[in-house]
Length: 314
Figure 1 (cartoon, helix red, strand yellow):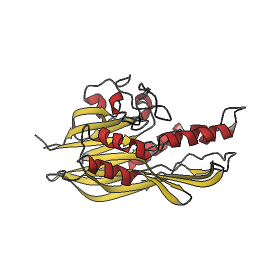
Figure 2 (cartoon, one colour; figure 1 turned 90 degrees about the vertical axis):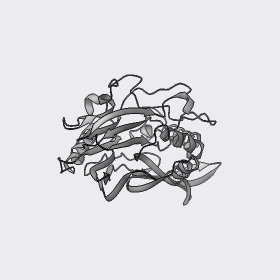
Figure 3 (cartoon, rainbow, N blue to C red; figure 1 turned 135 degrees about the vertical axis):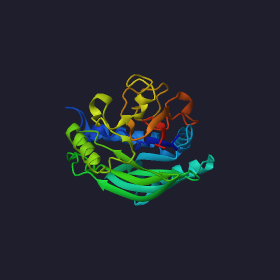
């Protein structure tokens, strides 16, 4: 029997659905109304209100390694408003299962002026992909690598003075369990342009040069199973564990933009654990059941997470 390792992926949700701003409001719509709706969602989903629910979701099936996407740092007027990584690590520690960051790759960033109570506030957001390791895990980590994709979606200039750069990237860690090596990779590919997304996927695969070594690639691929396009050498852990590829029990995206929907609204499966050179033992979806809505009545994220237990070759 080989050594076992548990891995996970979870998109933390930056806090609002930015599609109306990034893709442009429908013809005849008021762009200011779209901006006001984004601001409303940000206020409704404030990270401190849902961080304990996020930590609890991750600890439904505590993983050795977790790939996180949309790990945001929000600033208002130059001061830190919400630091997702720091607050999540503190919540995990409070709930008795501490983690530590191993590697992070900054990706998207944006800025704009928001009027609050008649006062103009400069709002800034920066997001990252991050890998966490559970303290006390038997998984040891060595070298780490990061990268930004050469293909990126260009955000059209809006009418509200907003600036945004939607770079996408990946981060990876060289790992071992009892001397058995493997590579763990975390990514978040393009949501708003399929051609860019596919080019980014191929660029990521091109970086995994050692085909003889087990590899685990997790992340938000922003593509349903028939469009994700991973090569035959990689196994979809969710399907390999015996789950249906699509349908309500498989979907990982998306809850309502303000996270206040009472019933789940997940319709698409776009978050994956891909495995090469290891056996899939099990796979579980976390953060998708209504009881995960804590006292604030918020879903932990607009995504559900995926956890997989793997067995490395003996």
